[in-house]
Image (cartoon, rainbow, N blue to C red):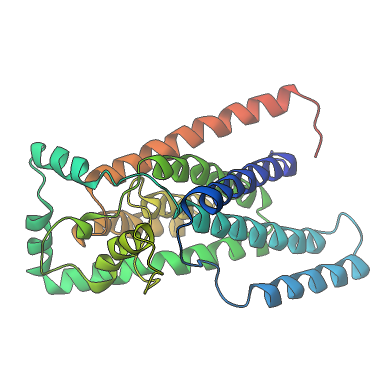
Length: 298
């Protein structure tokens, strides 16, 4: 089965790093905003551990052995997540004003009122609790499922996953940089927003008033919704196992719904996430056709 080439993954990773570096330089020389560090702790130790693991696998197994490829894919997965963390650090330095008032006005014209949605969810506390648990599960899905795919040697699936992660970041982060959003809690008055949701807008205001952020809680990008994007990508990882895939599909439908019902996202954010993912799907199809018509250099 064909898979996304290493060459394409490296190209997309390089593009993410180059664009992130440009944003860092623009901020350093012109805007000088402070910011948060979105890199998790223990990265140097984990990088060293993966390097030592791969050196051991190289010594113990022949070149085309599946075990060696597992080790190599772990390096790829770790690297891709690091590149996304770098891009996240960069994109917070957007110098442009938020477009949340426009989105909120547009949704009100569509007869979508976030205050009413939050009040309805609050009136169903058990449902709200379940939605909260499902919403928080995405972090675990994105940590565990790729490792499962790598361990079972579904390398074509994990390479496709890398492609979608990187390409959606390029498009979605690029859109956010020029048209930033800080989520409903930043402009809508409701007693039902959580402190973490309020922190999303607080961080943005502090950074753009040259105040060192007092919190790293909450989210960052509202439009497009990366929760919606990543929820679909996690389902796609399991497509070769019909029953788990169907169960996760149902779960992540609730996850996507929770983005709006819990007040993390506007409905337009979800639509934006679907559009970004659709663009990346067609981009993958184009790259696949181009790769088949060109000499295979991997």
